[in-house]
Amino acid sequence: MPLLPSQDNQDGDALAVPAGLSGYQLLSDARLNKGTAFTDAERDAFGLHGLLPPMVANIDDQVMRRLAALRGFSTDLERYAFLRPFPPLKRNGPFRVDQTNNSYIFPGVGLGAVATRARRITDSMFMAAAKALAALSPARNDPAANLLPPVTALREVATEIAVAVGRQAYAEGHTSGVEAGGIEAAVRAKMWTPRYRAYQRAGANA
Image (cartoon, rainbow, N blue to C red):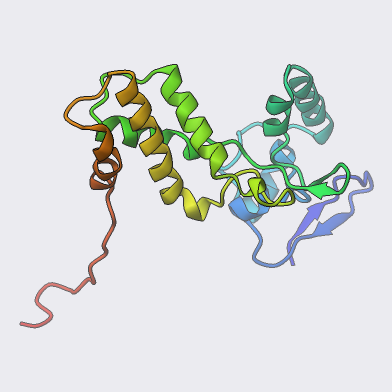
């Protein structure tokens, strides 16, 4: 089983890493991810080249940089988003920290704008997108659930956001060639569904 030097032991002891855990999966484990503290040898052993900045920095330097960044945020929302890579926190019981990612908003904004031929994208349209995403939060029905929908639902999320964005654009007079009642249909008409055909070597049936 591959070994990593222990993060909290100065005697050079190694930490056993489960077999098969490497690359992005290793970096996704907050208990094992050392960030730029991975040595060049460890990056070779665990397939981390290209997934991290090329520099190597120790854990103490990383902690001080991250702490300075955290203290620089002025709102709880910013701090909440920043803490996303950490394991579940405990505050009146454990709760998970979600990542606020562009993949939740921007596909729907673009789809809604294209479907309604919007001439511009306004702050109000982004606000409509944010409210549509908030309405889809699992935490609305279960306080212990995640704040954001699962990534497996991103297609449905994009559809809902696109409709909300399109309606806001229509209300502001930025759309063309679509009526209020046809916005959802226009959005769905612009969506692409991948269909993968089976491959066959040329001349196989000749």
